[in-house]
Amino acid sequence: MSEFTLDTPTQEPGLDTAMKVVYQWSYDPDVEELRTIYHKATELQWIAERDIDWDRDIDDEKFSTTPLGFAFPIDQTSYWKALDEEVRWDLVRRMAGFRLSNFLHGEQGALMVASQLVNAVPHTDAKFYAATQTMDEARHVEVFAKYVKKLDSVRPIAGPLKNILDATLQTDDWMKKLVGMQIVVEGLALYSFREMRNLTEEPLLKDLLTYVARDEARHHGYGVQYISRCMPMLGDAEKIELEDFALEAAQTLIDQRRGQSLIADVMAIWQEAGIDPSELLQCAFRERDELMQDRPRRLGPVQGFVIPTLKRCGLLSERVATHFHEFLHANLSGKVVGENVEEFMARVPDLPEDTAAWVMGQAE
Image (tube, rainbow, N blue to C red; front, side, top):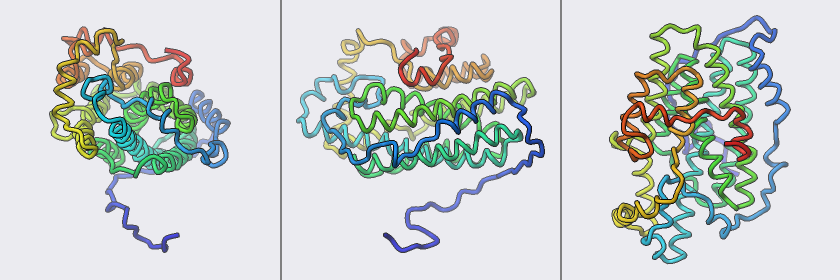
């Protein structure tokens, strides 16, 4: 055990945040849907050390089925197939380590935002639920850290994710915190957890993601229910601010034109494993039409889940939809996004009515 110190070598300098504290002297239930989800959260608490069998080793062969997280099937290209089997496994391990490390770091950010919400939200039921989410997020940090250390080393947080977390922690507007965390970050995570959980065959990872995804479905539901209840109370200027906050968060994460995106971190990992990123990308471009011909259209987490959530909450006006279409079209295929904002809006799917069932793969 390391020697106890007040400052640790792994911590960052403190982040200045504007934190409001709101006392609420009424303890009666006043937001029924939030009180209900709070009760459900207390009933579904789990203990990571007891409920997950950590004595198991990671099954390398089954882990190789875990999706890489790309919309394009990189692993089906001739370049990938020509790689030595050991090189392919090393690349899968490194890529998964990067992806899971950022899940881990995102959960730490969610832990801190949830604790802020206990202070900042004005309704007692909302404070109660934020307290249960704080406990959930602590468990999520615990389990992702354990799994990543079994698989790979914990990798640094990706710059775009750090920017979103910083902005959400720093805002003094509790509704922006809800939008930034519960809708954007939790929405991205929930979509990714569902995909990884339902496609991986690695037993320990599947168990971990089952527990975590169930929690995340509640967290997302909390944000949807609370923001939807608040929206009719807001003026036009306040709605625009919330829309723009969500837009900025989503754009920060995937817009490659900003000079810092997840794809840059991914290519650095390819180079670590001895892969030439330019050759792999050129091969993918040459074989794109053939490989994508019979594959179902994949909208991805922003278009497939975050934007439908914003629509459900009343935060997808034509004004902001135009901005979403512009940057998604610039970064993704027009066949997926649509060539104009009308096509884009027509392709926005409805949010699942039962998110908990959807995340377990029981409903589309």
